[in-house]
Structure formats: structure tokens, C-alpha cells
Image (tube, helix red, strand yellow):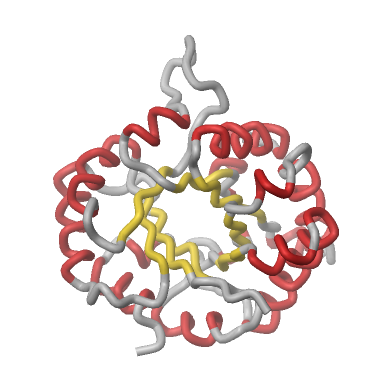
Length: 253
């Protein structure tokens, strides 16, 4: 049986100026013991990546970005490439977050190109998938997720996918205070792992980390993390406060 190291990732979204991000990162580091079981990642806004990188450089905290473009350079005003993120200190990059899909028209095909660009740059993609409330109520959860994975992972080899992290984020639970029940979350995570097994084989699927994202908070983390196919959390609002995020990181304590 594959042992998967848990991962707790914080997506700060469009919050925090550079000084605020530095203060938050510094406070978070102060909450850690250095003996955490889970791998820790934070994804500040792009403007704060470099200053935050300097603060967390020698700590257990890894740096992630919230997005990237699929070309390395060119006339793409406002975009940031994989090599740029690497040079800023990033190891991870979130791809296909529901807010990118909802507000900025990001497609499964675009997600696919971004995943390949991330892998080529040496970044670990955190690949987000999830269904809306209407889709869940209509019994379409699995078909929606299958389509997102089918198109998003198209053309990726087993080796290219091997380091990737999946994140299931039910859109209806993001920022709403609602969370999928443990049974709902486990059912979907097991389905995602089965899809990955069919696509990449049992060994790769067994090693893949699948995070849950959707109103994660200290009160529900331990229950979610106890489930067999949930390997961590992609945390939104609760990651903005160092003390609260540290409680989630130390969910077993």
C-alpha cells in the first residue's frame, strides 16, 4: 500500500498586499514546530511571491502560485509563465481553480495546456476539479468530473502526471460555509482515484495525492483527513489567518 504524505495548501486568492503577506507568512512560520506530518504550501498573490519566498525559504513551508500561462514568454500582457514562477521561488502552482473557470472563462483545454507548461517548467501542478450545485443536484457530479479530467489530463504521460496533485473542490462549498459531508467527499475522491488508475495505472493512482477543498476549517479537518482517499486540504479563507491555518495543519494534535 502506498503511503501518501498529507498536504495542507493555503490559497490566499486576491488578498494581502506585500507587507501583509510578509507578516502573515512570518506569523505562520512562528506557529510551526518543524515536525509537521503534512507538507505545507501557501499560494500568495503574484505580487507577494518573491517577498514571501524570502521569509519561508528555510522553513517547512513550500511556495505556490495561483495560476500561470502556458507560454514561457511573449507578448502576453498581464500573464506570468512557469519559468517566472520558478525564479520567484515557487514549487507548486494551482491550475483550473473554479474561480478561474467561472470568472475568467478558463476551459478544460486551457487547463491541459497549463498543466503541461507547469510540468515542463519543473513545477508541481495542483489540478482543481469540481461540480456546481446545479450539476450535483442533477446527478451529474461524476460525469462533470470525468470530463474535466479527461480533457484536462489529455496527452499527459504517466511520468508527467506522477508528481501532480489533484484537488476536488465542490463549487457549491467554496466560500459558502457549506462543506461536503465526509461520505460525499470520500465517494468523490475514490471515484477520482479510480479514474486515475484507469488512465495512469494502479501505482501512479495509489501514489497520487487528492486534496479536498470547500470551506475547510479546523472543526472539520480531522474528520475529512481520516478518510482513506483524502490526502489533504486546499484551504481558502481559513488560510488567511495564521493561527487558524496552523490549527488545520496540526489537525491531529
